[in-house]
Amino acid sequence: MSHKVIITCALTGSIHTPSMSPHLPITARQIASEAIEAAEAGAAILHLHARNERDGRPLASPDAFLKFLPEIKAKTDAIVNITTGGGQNMIVDDRMQAALRVKPEMCSLNMGSMNFGLYPILEKRKEWAHDWEPAYLEGSRDFIFRNTFKDIERILKDIGQGCGARFEFECYDVGHLYNLAHFLDRKLVTPPMFVQFIFGILGGIGAETENLVFMRQTAQRLFGNGFHWSVLGAGRHQFPLGVTAAQMGGNARVGLEDSVYISKGKLAASNAEQVRKMRHLLHELSLELARPEEVRAMLQLKGKTNVSF
Picture 1 (cartoon, rainbow, N blue to C red):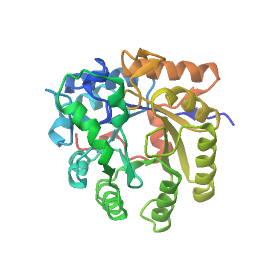
Picture 2: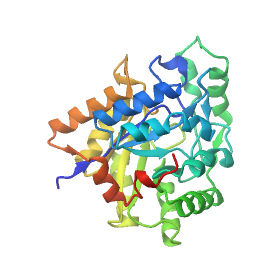
Picture 3: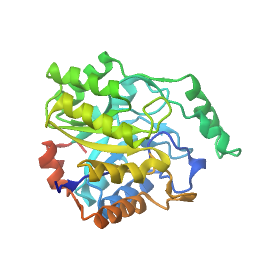
């Protein structure tokens, strides 16, 4: 059945470090500019993290987000989606503070604790612009990305019910879908849901097409028709899995948070370049993009006039 595809663009994240790409947006000026260009290229949802402008470290400070959020709101109609995943070594209090302050239409919400291994990246690079980068990556060898049931309950209540935000439910493995079903049964989550299947992160489910089919079948069994779904394929899996998802009735996420490349061995010059490539691939398959106002209706979002930035 023909459907309109939602493109989410994740601009900077907390996985890639400045030495991995000169095009990774770090400053508020860069993040705002990249967000506006990505929206103009066709991204309906902008998934946002903040960075320290001096050295590129991931930041949780609401003030850091407020340096770029008003401009993005003023110059685009895109849906702003604030992370609650934050970055390595941030506690849940840190990860929630920006969303509590700015009360966005959407937030990400990770649906379970997991190992989150970034340390293999160390084998691919010998020189680093900042001392924190190799230490940060090595630290993931002994890092558990904490998302307990209590943590998830708190985010659902304080940011969901308290701020009127809806969520991009990030599911890195099949057990995370069952965790989401648990909260749906308890009515802490209500349809329509936006479920992001994530493939290719060390510690989560592998990036095979068979796993995508299995995740979708499991979600359909658990949630019926009460959800929309999207795919995040990490690294080189970004475009193949995103296009496969769109052909199967799902949606796609791109952005320099998930991959710094546009093709094999070639760095993406911008987030917008990745959005344009995904848009082109979908156009070749006769698939249309969903506009922000259509996504707001699909996901029953509160609207950009009801945020606090």
